[in-house]
Picture 1 (spheres, rainbow, N blue to C red):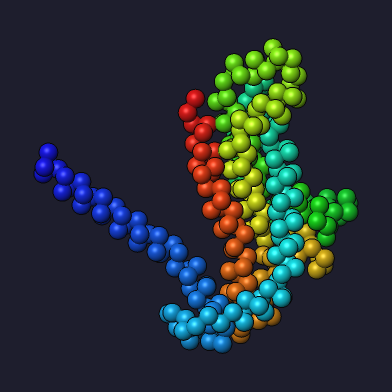
Picture 2 (tube, one colour; picture 1 turned 60 degrees about the vertical axis):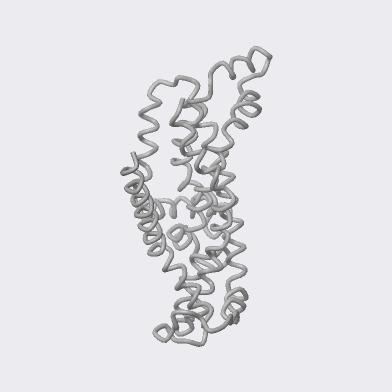
Length: 275
């Protein structure tokens, strides 16, 4: 037994060191982005490994130029989350509880839709958006971005709702609750983790969207941060400090949401795997 203890300890240390190395490699681009943003007067090839001071002029310039685009991305992303959950939650509940014929085929088809390249969907949507008057509109971009998260949300929430005990639903029905009330008052509160996880991924899909923003907007009326940074690089190709500062600012909202919702994400993803 004593001989096994040092071996187990060395394995734990080895796993810890390997994990730290992988984490360092993954986080290095983020560090270099922040490092470059704090050295706005340095050229891209003259950036020091560690900033000598905290020069925030790049952030102030980026915030002045891209602040409106950040706000646009927030509005569009949260709108896409609302649409995504409003569509996917009832769909997932129907597939999970009503015993619909061909429900597995529907779920499989839902997964297949995520394999279609975004440029194909964007080009197909553009002609429809022109006819519907949704080009260059917040609502139109919200709808398009919501479509990125709906398939994932349906699959995730269905797997979670399937694991909800049928006795709970039957008890609510015996107490006189109708199908809509059971869904709103019983199923949705019990599916909180799956809802938060689905909403977070829908937000991330919408926040990082570039293809729909580029294709479905022909003016500057609705310009999310991804499109703003794309055009910002062209206008400030020599000022990489401001470009990197804008990139750092664009990563902050997503990072905050990930930190706040991490425990719900773990529970939401694994919740449907255990019945």
